Image 1: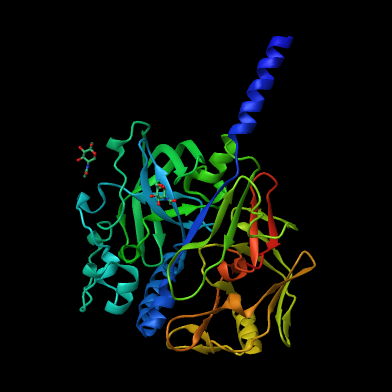
Image 2: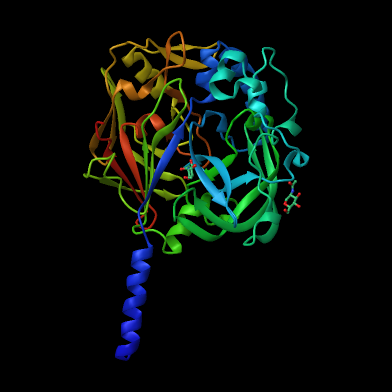
Amino acid sequence: MNSKNAQILAIFLAISVISAEVHQFQIGYRPNLRQRLAAEGKLAEYHQKQEAARKTLVQAGAPIIDYEDMAYMVQITLGTPAQNFVLFIDTGSSNLWVPDITCAGGKDATCGSYCKSTPYDACLTFCQEECCTKTPQILSTADACQSKHRFNSSLSSTYVTNGQAFDMTYNTGEVKGFFGVDTFCFTNTTACATSQIFGQATTIGEAFGKQPEDGIIGLGWPALAINGQTPPLFNLFNQGQLDQPYFVVYLAKIGPTSQLNGGTFTAGGLDTANCESQVDWVTLTSKTFWQFKLGGASAGTYSSNAGWQAAADTAASFIGAPKTVVEGLAKAVGAYYVSLVGAYFIDCDAVAPDIQFTINGKTYNMPSTSYVVSAGPGPCMFAFYSLTAGGFYPAWMLGPPFMRAYCHVHDMQGARLGLSKVLAH
Ligand SMILES: *[C@@H]1O[C@H](CO)[C@@H](O)[C@H](O)[C@H]1NC(C)=O
Ligand SMILES: *[C@@H]1O[C@H](CO)[C@@H](O)[C@H](O)[C@H]1NC(C)=O
């Protein structure tokens, strides 16, 4: 290489280093459907329906993803000029999808359809007053898209057709549509990836229509994505948009009130504002979920060191674990199971011990403030559920209650998960 070329290369490298950045923005929070229903005394009814739907799906051998439990979201844009979407963050899946303009026949509606089916008082919390009715209405499937932000590819100069069909089955409905390719950005940041493949949903299940979010951004590994597509964060990294191959999830807010500022998402570096600088790295055991070996779990006099596969999952909302462990932990902290509603409860002001996890020989403490979840009037919920893992699913889904105690650093290059204690604010 001659010196001129070397000089040009040096300048080029300097520019690419400067253009890669650390991007930081807010994660929104709102209570998940289970909390909302518990607050309204409607959880029992929901549980019966859910069990019936689950049985049908288990017979059909379909994967079950509980999107109704998701609680944390980010804002993103697709296309040029940018079209805005609010998406659930899901480290337990790897596809990005938004409703397409053709969803529900492209009709317009100003109120979310979820508002119409939500009891009046709760509706006032989540929706504008004029969108709430005192007599909840039954929704039809075709209705589910109407309130959503919908992607219109004709408005985007950077859109590229793909057209391949997709069909994802969730426990209460389906998301169907086709794939397209366009520019992806996190709203109001320079974290943008070109040629991002994403789903354009033409049909979304009724249950999704009850949620204010538009779709899902999968943050899992490409191997977990339909057709092995590259998820946005991996695309951002591959395209040199990130300073370091990390994204960090810090979750803060909890309880019955929605918040715009429910946590912080950091792409391209560490989150020094919310997380301690000491990061313990845990090697992943699979590059599908953010999966690793959990050595043991204990609380008070209960302890099990059976050792399991566990996945860090922002979407699980609660912590899914083997039944015997959930029963053991519940007993140790003073939580009780109410079979009618299929959930564990605990007194909100219970003085309960920390739950401890052993990972890589090190102990991680999850205080009761992380796992006792307020659900309106009445007792609080104990943020665990029994998980019947099968096939390639891990035995544990370590959801937000654990993330509220430890920031999760996802290393896309080193295939490891970093845990660092949340800073006291
Ligand atoms: C999508 O955008 C195109 C181009 O502006 C417009 O003609 C069309 O009406 C839009 N579709 C809908 C359903 O709004
Ligand atoms: C993005 O910026 C606009 C204009 O400043 C602002 O109104 C909007 O709330 C911002 N959105 C997010 C998600 O930060």
